[in-house]
Length: 235
Image (tube, rainbow, N blue to C red):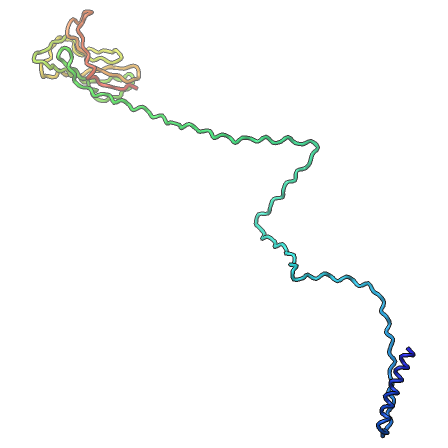
């Protein structure tokens, strides 16, 4: 420090001498005081923290997860299987049930009732036809007398004689309606009415029966006209 101060004084004196060679100044210059340089102490070493790395242009900032929109239905928590000492056997896979085809059910169709053929005159072996018609109705109750009108026709050109005439039911009942010997004239209807009583419910046919000869013998000549029979119901 002393050497530096000495140098500074020499420099100052040199400057003053140069001014003296040019002429005498009218005024004496006041000496300039040179300030002593101040001593700057060396700063003590300090622990400087490392700078925080700054992202460069090439390093893209980490993307942040965009939160998913909330849904109305919260997700069910996943069931966590609790470990056990004994492993459970695998669950058998059940085969899907085989579809069983149900057989088509057929609705039974009721049988179509067979229409009862209308009673009609059909010529028999003696040239005569017979027809029976229910007189008042076709449905009766047990014990009620059913009345019929019968008719016999002669389809020949000559009178045909008979000994007995009556009505016979399909259950075997017979009622004699005409017992006196008589004749059936050609083209002249022989008509009369008679009745039967039925003791059992059912459906019956009633036809005209004529005995033409030997009615009191085993070989009597009978003819029954079922094509012309009436049909009735007894309840």
